[in-house]
Length: 593
Image 1 (cartoon, one colour):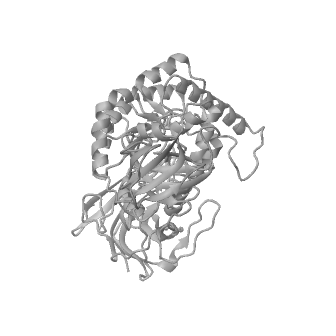
Image 2 (spheres, helix red, strand yellow):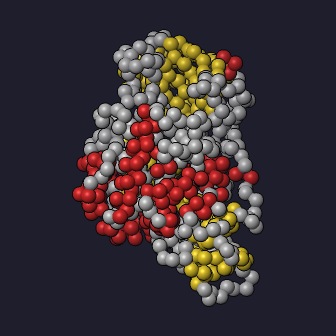
Image 3 (cartoon, rainbow, N blue to C red):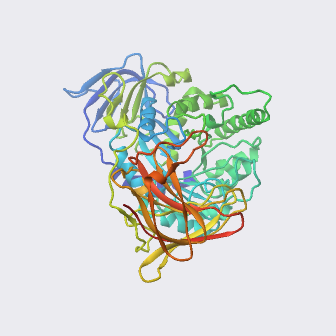
């Protein structure tokens, strides 16, 4: 496993380093700081010389060239920037928009993160967006699960690929080549945290095939699991790291030895499971769910220490973006929780820097302060190797050698103050279904949008010949046996639904439809969703739905948003039928008018 992948590591790092387009940065000298270099060595007083985005030299007697910007860091600690290998940049998180999430990480001294939330179709526009921001380096994880498994219980297969055999796993990884993900997240634990029957976990052979295919491309594999038995499956499945801690029971010495021998690491995400993290309302100590969470968290802490003591690499991940786990600050809290588990403050700092970089195969580029490394570094008012709580005392943050936060930093780019990209306009034609590559007339990837849960409605969409010439989209579905099962499809108006569209110059949506009953046409946007009823018959009919007919859709406890038409992302069509029944429709020539 990780120790046996040295050659693969070097091969993977070369293109990463060669492709890193660093702008020529200023020459900076940080003087007087106590440098904790991330290796675990004791802090020492040193000057750090930064040039062209990288660390040129460091030591007590470094001579810095004339004209360098000097930063007097006496009384401060200098550390590598922190890495968080497990985050979700989701609209359900805190903060919940990309620029604000980026800002939160920058201010917390987190300089590299993995985002586990996005569909591959969105990588390119998101990467372009990030170029406009003061942001950590963001690495995108492609998601692979099992049918009905965790992560596949809400996402379409353009977001989370479903596999259940080695052949399917290899094909899934191969299908991602065009998107160039930075890593793979495999949901080996298909069930939900031990609260449902284990009907959907990924078997060892499928996981191993997935890992091997990903490693051919230099992509690390992080695996979702929270149980000891599934952790052992992950170790045998050749993954690089667990994406969570093991919390169902204490791990035995023999099981620790097996994981150690495999070379697999663990990023325990204690922050997301901490039963005492801040809550909007006080928790009842007698609540059975709280009692269970305390017990499981105790196992998680105990198992982190047992694995660490055996030499298993412990990285830093938080699952930030999940409830009660805010971006930025949770990364710092995770290091405090690693200390609670029994690591020393210095060992927790190494977990959040060098070890996390090694797990991500980035340790040739960052994670420690040494000549040639990327100058992602943090100044802290305090001695976090003595008092881990000092990690919250962030003074200055440098990314690629540029001061991005702290006294003397330039103002954040204006894009960091926005909560979305500026809206664009599109042509009236959304999709005429003449392409057979699943892409719309707008060159966006159509999405199937079945209901969520373990038992999901089965649907197939495909382009078929239309009566009288041309092509149309046919949808066929077998409805799941549940309340209000749903099947449908959505056409993003821009790649990955990242850039919003202003449709306020149009009056409504027009399309041709035939089908077997009632459906709903929906417009999805950044601020809400709006829908209208429509009926299909066995003969083609043209439908013209004005925007005034669309009604806001309530989301959770919130009411629907008022229609402006200025931040639209998708047009969706679908319907419900009683559980177990079939539904079909055909649609053509969707356009605005």
